[in-house]
Structures are given as C-alpha cells and as structure tokens.
Image (cartoon, rainbow, N blue to C red; front, side, top):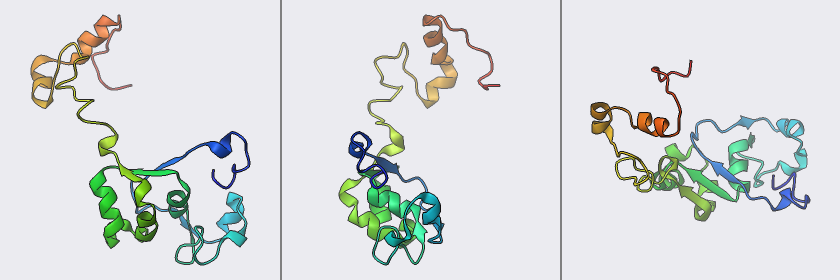
Amino acid sequence: MKITYRKDPVLGLAASVYTLHNLGYQGVYEDRVLDLAGFGRDQFHPGSPFEHDGKVNFMKLAVHFADKVSTVSEGYAREICQDEKLGAGLQEVLRARRKDLVGILNGIDMDEWNPATDPHLPRNYGPESWRASGSPRSSSSANRGWTLRSSTSPW
C-alpha cells in the first residue's frame, strides 16, 4: 500500500497493520516475482526492503512497510526480536520496528472479554460451569427469539 497507493489522495493516507502468525512461512521468491507483483526490479538491491539474502521476502516487506506490526503476545514479540530460531532470519527488521511491534494476547483482552466475570451475560460461566449448568447460549438465544439446532455443527 505504501508504494502502490502513495499518491492516491485517500488510500495514500490509509494506515496498515500486519499480523505475524507463523514466521516459518515468509513468502520467499526469486527477484523475477517483482515483475508479477508490479514492482520494478530496480527496487531489488542489497540493503533495500525488497532484498533478503538474495531473494524477495514478502514478509520482510510487510513488516518493513506496515504502520504497526502485531503478533500473538508481548512475550512472543520480544522473543522473535531476540531469538535467532524464533525470528527466522527476520530479527534485524523486527528489531528495527520494535517500537511498532505489539503483542495482543489471543487477539482479545481477557479481562474485558471474560465470560466468568462479564456483567453483560445473563449468567456467567467458565470451563467448570459450562458442562454442569448447560449452555448460556440457550438463554441468550431465547431472549432474542432465535431457535437453536441441537447440533453445534454448521452442517
């Protein structure tokens, strides 16, 4: 986005977030892939964001150009910057982006979205109370006039 839409009056102002899930799948290709992706090979040279160990690495590009980078936890965010194995060769670019690298535990705030303490639920529940007292989904659905199927499978 930063390159393709930089002159667009709307999209040029758009912010982006790249979320790291598995550093083992980085999208590494020969430089000819830049032609297919719409970038000139003139952008591929040692030291450029487009070059990584003699190849194009799309994950490195995403980390480099995103406004923010997120991952599954603050601990993992620290570890991938420090540990060679966990950083999978991207430690340098990750360390360069450390101020913009954040960890979001499981993608939610467990204090705010906790069914054991949530005041908005008709009945609180947790791992132990779920089976013993039946599904809280039933009363919530009934209050909305919905009918639940007996199976939890979507088909």
